Image (tube, rainbow over the protein chains, first blue to last red):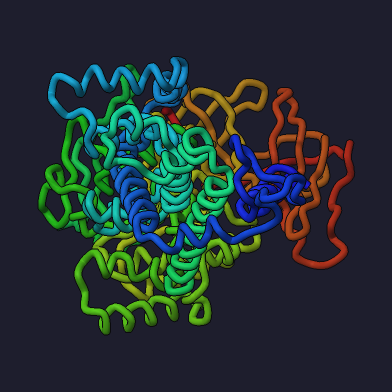
Length: 260
Length: 361
């Protein structure tokens, strides 16, 4: 029921919207023509435009590149932090988690503008680098928290056992800690990867014109060119692409398990 | 030279001295047990032998070499943890292969050794299962196989049977002894269960408050406890406080208030006039109806207060004339003899001179 109301229904509305004509002043054209010469009914026009130009594919590819890079950087930065919190004495842990989520207490846009002030003097503004910085900064807590939740549950006796049986620090990490933390790695990655794809504010504020990603295109379709059907089609494509990635990831994870 | 030697080892945690100047030597091939109540320092000592903790003073030597600078992963000493600590993301076979892989064995060698280890613990069919699919006893065996597969010089076992139910524990005890004989590896076993310690060990160190109270073979510990703590901790025992009145070699006469003089044996060198405790095992005490002829030097009248019928034996609780209570254990060796005496019966409790041990500590 929850899924129907909050996922399936909006998705269906999107599917229908993507198949309609844009209205004269934005919005959607009516399904039945009321005036002569007016475009009405259903059409595949948006899809035709999308598939007839490589530029959309390139923007999708670039968006995925940004998302993958952001996810990887977040993972590398979050892992030590999560491990540190998980191994700290219990009474400090809540405080440290609070510090991780503290940035949420101030407005998101204000924090992104703060990065403008920081990156500006170094002439790093309006670049891919600035976009990645902003993306990583905003999404880092979403990686730290699931990782911490996972690492905290690890039985310290397992590391003792591994060491006792001859594993050095490096082997203890790769053979015990990391494989056991994979569920946390997966959920953290999903929580970073998916929002990054839809993000438009950070590329708009910190990036240059070349740093547009799917999110910007969707936003522009609705608020700029006022072509709702095209925007709906883009969102739908994005949803399908994310689902494809998720399916591939779970298939890979499943294969890993059966091989292990 | 002993295989494993602990020399004057002390470990403090803040104001608490967990291990206090302990020295002991474990010989190759022994089944050595550290026995004591919780908090006596036995687990701390075990962790120092494994290398997870370092002594504040003293040294730990393996085959004569000081282990202070050798981290746990380099020590040829493996531990079976109380919680088993099996790797949940690995199959049984991968768990057992872990130490072999860490040591860089060749794959063919590893699979052969894993097969042998699985056979040793009778789990040939379980190699491809995950730990969560196993019962407690099976997990225990996997943990043992994993620790034994790379043939450590010493195997440390930290209360490994604590999580098993009574029947399974007994089966595992027998298997442990068999296994230890089969692999010939020195076992250092930590437990708070005196039954387990007596049943398994070739020698036992009884620990209390960070110190070794007595180190001996099981039968010596049981029969000749050195002090009150050991006497009380190992098995059931009756203790009577009194004063030594006469000493003749190992024969000692002790005066206990309300009971008169009791003949017992004691260590050489005891002096008359010192306060002492008589320790007497319940199974050494005979009970007889008042007036029955008993050719024993120590005879004391009393009354049956209670009895506990356990099956193989019955434990009688006797109120003696001085108000003290004592226990007597009578075997039920022929059927229908469950009750020799009823509650309230007047009886004579008697025991031979060599049954009681005089303790001064």
